[in-house]
Image (cartoon, rainbow, N blue to C red):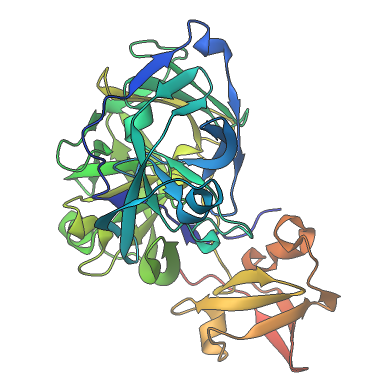
Amino acid sequence: MSRLPILFALSLIGAAPPPSTAVSTLAADSEARWVPFDLTPGNQIRFTVAINGVAATAILDTGVSASVISRSFAATYRMRVQPRGNASAIGGNVAIGWTPTQNIAFGGMVRHGGGITVTALPAIATGSTHPVDVLVGHDLIDAYAIDIDFEGMRFRLLKSGQLPFRGTSAPLSIAANQNVYVTEAVLGGRRLTPMVVDTGDGSSITLSQESFRAARVVGLPTTTTIAYGLGGPLVTDLAIVPSLTIGKLTASNVEIRVERRGGFSQQIGAAGRIGSGFLQHYRVLLDPAAGHVVFGPTSQTGMPPMRSTSGILVATETARLRVLHVMRGSPAEATGWRAGDLICAIDGTPVPTDYSGSEISSWSIGSPGRVVQLSGCDGTERRLKLGNFY
């Protein structure tokens, strides 16, 4: 069921592994070896990968400078972890290690030898109840083209240079200093570069404060939202811009999140990030070796972004909702809602176990003017009138 998602992002920079003798091969029939996936509550591509022959839950994440496994996975399978210092992540720095691997396989790709970065992968970074085991980053995939079919919920690895569908292109390369996928965008007539193409970021478009100010897009009503990364939570500003251009593609009514000064994008020298919240409106071919990303039209292309009309962003807990953030200028802020408040029923209906996929979850983006009865877990009853505020 539709609901306003909270941003969850798994970007990790500075996690480059030591020199490796790993050998990666792509099967001759790789184009037929589609990898099925689902989307986490945070909009990330989740699928199954084999690490040393063991099935593991992975996120396809072009925003990590080297692939990562979780400390818990490494501990469970007794992998030897060597400390490697710290890396930059959304929300702060995280401690990392490194461990050798025998093989890593998914779709038509198998890599023998080499190793993988190790760090903690908390469940909150995907919005899921259970954490993932692996982040599949550029070191495993950048020699190939990735064809992501969001409508079919599947992707595949192809030899670079193939064009499996028609679409609109934009430049794409691997940043030499950060080892992530990068392109460029234009907002308000201002060229923004580099823009990290980050499939591990569940948002649409995120900009550094400096980039957003340089674009001089005036008169936009703005609010706030909350983001969760490997380094923890952070608050960003939020607006919807009339248009944004990426290469030859022009998109309308695009949700923009603006980091505060010193945010992750500024730290890594990027103008911002293009996340899966934007990419999932298209069929996408990422082919850095060929120098382009291709956007193919789908039934979701041109769909307007969801807007909160309540201003309440929540996390699902057992039989209740916990308020994580109250958006600036919202009906919720005006009526005294605070982070940490607990909701146990909506319009008299108890919060169900499957809240995220239930009909009841759409209340927070309901029609302006609707009045929602929210029952606190302490027995209090509050009425909230929904309305537009950004």
